[in-house]
Length: 309
Ligand SMILES: [Zn+2]
Image 1 (cartoon, rainbow, N blue to C red):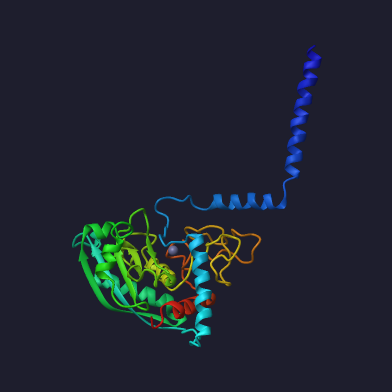
Image 2: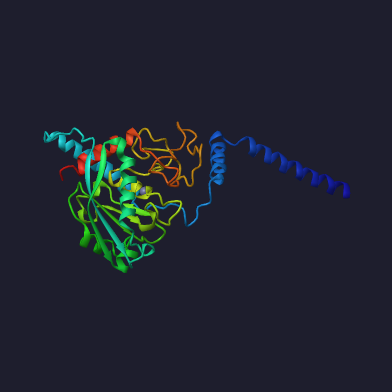
């Protein structure tokens, strides 16, 4: 009997080993790539509360609708005989609104020098692409509700009271957005339906000299102004489809954090991840560029929705 039991156990061991080998070698190339991608993800820093988080609305259905609206408007412009040639740059007037809950910098009352430094960072980022930003008005408001509720329940009240200018003027609000948000912006295509909400909101401590390291070199404002000019995140749509609707930013599966040199999250698509692009989620010290394709998109978005509007 013992001999039979021994043989039975041996048979089970062989069966399990054979099943493992069959499964292992029937793994498809796609599965192996996915496993490889997963290993790559593991190498990335674990996402924590302090990672960059942008509150700009990237709902896929609304983005698809906005892209359709864009094509429709361009069609109308041509039909009406309007000039469809894109403006390729210009000076954008900036209304900078400082919302605070007290007189100290830590309570959001950033100094005028910090705002000047922020404007310089913004202008340097766009300098190669023909766009510049000129701060013509600065307002300061002490209101704890607006300060802490500027991403949420007090957005409308704050913007209704403070927003100035028209579609081609930029309103920037510095305050304390909730839920760990570093900032959020509205797209050019949203202006017509909601002009009062048009603008850019940033965390007060993200400006140069602020305390939000590693996001305190002023690139949150640059990132959000990128949205305001019509850009999506570089990782929008993942590896497939239209992505960010810009042809020269490589496809990216998910946001990149820190500064992961050599990251390639879409193995089947050309190019390494655009981790140095302002529209990714990397550290301020890692991101330093827009692309020619992004510039062309900003020009056409600005012309269609903002210029002279
Ligand atoms: Zn964003």
